[in-house]
Length: 85
Image (tube, rainbow, N blue to C red; front, top):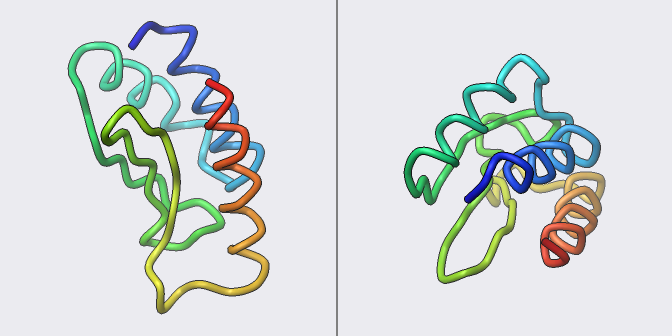
């Protein structure tokens, strides 16, 4: 993954899921230097808020027990945007 793509992904995590800007540099470095399939960003999705990079698919989710209607909407919107990358 290149730096531009990693930053676009992190933009989505920040805007749609409340990921912390302080973790951007680490996310971008990690995603561009190796294939990291699972990244815990927490944000508005709680401790289980994760970004996934599996089977050529980019998506987010959270622990089922932490799922609320608000979080479901966040996940749905973020995943729609991630599909366009």
